[in-house]
Image (cartoon, rainbow, N blue to C red):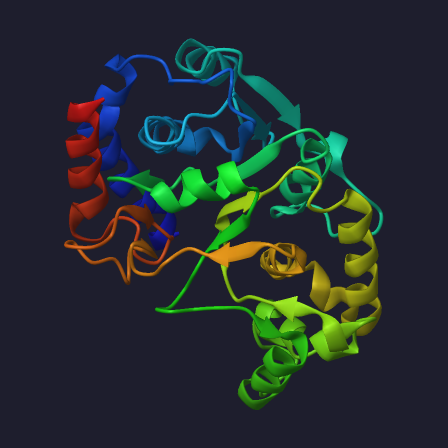
Amino acid sequence: MFYRLRDRIHRWRFARACRGVLRTPPVRLDQASGMVVLSQLPHKDVLLFLLALKSFARRVPPRTVYVLDDGSLTPDDRSVLRDHVPGLTFFERADFRSAACPVGGCWERLLSIGELVRDDYVIQLDSDTLTLGAIDEVGRAVADGFAFILGTWDRQGFESMQERAATARKLSKSPRDHVQLVSEAHLDQLSGFESRRYVRGCAGFAGYPRRSFERSFVEATSAEMRRLMGDKWSEWGSEQVMANIVVASVERARVLPHPKYADCHKMRVDLTEFIHFIGSCRFDRDRYARLGEQVIATL
C-alpha cells in the first residue's frame, strides 16, 4: 500500500514536470525506413511513452509504431496517442497468446514481435526509457540487419548456454530464487544447448531484424522450459529470459555498449545517451523528470 501511494506521488510530480511533451509536435516517422517500433503500454505510462518514443524517434525514426494495449488504455488515452503518433496501430494482448507460453507479463509482446519480424526490423522500446543524445549504434544495427539488446555491464558479450547455466547454478540456492536465475540454471538442458548462445541483457530495449526468428521458436523453447521448470516458468521475468535467448540465437547480434546505454542505477552523466529508468530507481532524486524536461525543450 505504501509503495502504491509513493508511486502515485512520484508519477504526479513527473507528470507536472513533463506534461509539456503534450505540446510538442507529433512523432517524426520515415516511410523509407524498414524499422518499426513496438511497445506494450498501460494507462499509467502514456506520458512516459510519448517522451520515450519522441526522444528516440528524433534519432532513429521508424516507419510506423505499434502499441500493445495491456488492457488498461482508455478511449482518451488512445485519442491522445493517435494525435501524437501518426498512423499508430493498436494491438490487443488477447490476440497474441499461445498455449505454449505463459500468459501476461510481457509474453504477448514477444509473441507479437515474432509476427512483425516477418516483414520488418522491430525495435522493442519500453515506455520508461529516454534518449538523450546520439545512438548511432542503433541506427547502424538497423541498417546492417544486426540484432541488439541493452546490456547490463561494461564490455558485455555473449556466452554459451553451458557457461551461463554453470554460473547460475553457483548463484542459485533455492527453487524459490528469481525466475531468471532458476531458468538460466536449466539452459544446458535445452535441446541443442551445446551450440547455443545466451546473453544476460534487458528486453526493455532490443532490436530484432526482419526474419531473425519465428514465433514457433519462442513457443517451442517455452514449452521445453515449462517441462523443465513447471509452474516456476510462469512467474514474472520469464519473458526476459526468452528475449535473451532469442537475441542470442541471431547469428549477427550485438550488446549495446555500456554505460552509453544503461539503466538509471548505472548511468553516467558524462557518457550515457540512452537510459532505462527501471522501477527500483525510476524516480530517485527526480533525475527522470529533470532530464525529461531538458529533452522536451529540444523537441
